[in-house]
Image (cartoon, rainbow, N blue to C red; front, top):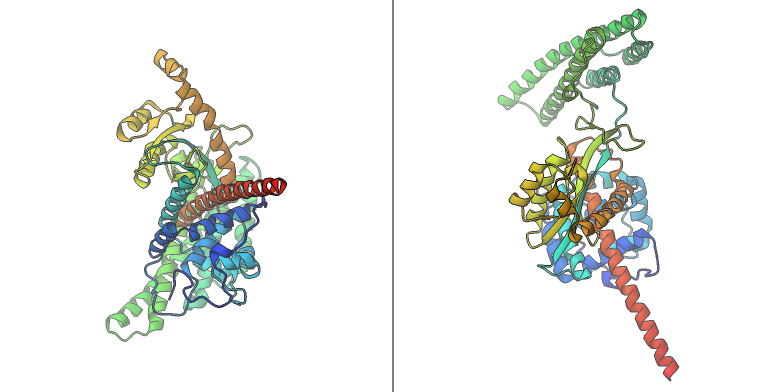
Length: 504
């Protein structure tokens, strides 16, 4: 049972519009709260937010089961985590101890509800990136109303990309084979106790021997001494793989017995749980065996056959296989292990949208990114400047024909033609290029909000963190505008009262 908001208010409850925030504070947390307060006190935005939150996790019943966290609390804390770039434990401490935050969450002053870090983790990871993207649209619509941007007015935008790291260690085929084999051994040992499979009781000895062979195989360059240890390392890894395959055969027999009982309707709920665990274990072990075979083949080809492994055949992390090896040629940065993320920011410092480059380069992302932005904001009329990495003659032609975007600040690579020189001498082009540098500031803000290093192990988790970070940045920007507007109004009021007192 999961509610959207706290419907039954207590006597100690403080209405959202009555919560007093410090207008003179420069703390980003206060600006974030101003943004949250402006959303909840706007009737039209609050209605849209209510309809939007109804789409969260439709598989969860809203009428049965024990009471869970309110959907609004989950989304609020998910954005706050990225705003502060903190851990779940610190987020739980703030949700339990900080009074003004609890008021925004809908708790009364005497409410004793307590959140744990694990509960926050389990609920926040259920938030979908689709929900966050729609919430981002709502925030941007409010932001444009605050700054006075009318429908039909020209909106100047800027596009660029950055690499979000994935916390992957420096990849070598020997190290990846060692990690794959060690993970295989640990998985098999866990199954030994769960399903009474024999042959894996010497976990400590097997892992120590594997690590010893790995360390000796890295010593030296191409000496005969090192090659002997590499052969021993490969042979030992192959033996562990054969041993795991035999265990899979034993698990297959248990799986067939459980399926037979299920077909005869003689199985219990424990048998169904056991079957699910066996199938998940088979999937994990099969994945590790695949990686072991891949890295063993690459080691043999590279060390013994002298081949150069093509880039497209390499895997840089067994736990985060979507990790890419990025070389942009920047000063002081030889390479980055992560995934590029392209964004579009408007002239009011709101991030309109993003595109994750799982494959390809900025050139491949330019057109899909613009088309997704146009689908989300069909009422906007935009011009856009692009970084040099997005340019190609084909991309520019597609942007001009397949989209309604007016491309102004896209610089051409290489030698300029006469027409290109004339285009770059126009005032519109110069103005667009001068304003393009502000997107670098947006990249820095995203890095500080948690997009510099993303520790999620799945593509869905990676995209959720990216979407949540952009929501947090836009809420902060909305709150900053509201805070500045209220501060100017308060100062005008003080000056007017001062003049009245002097006149009296």
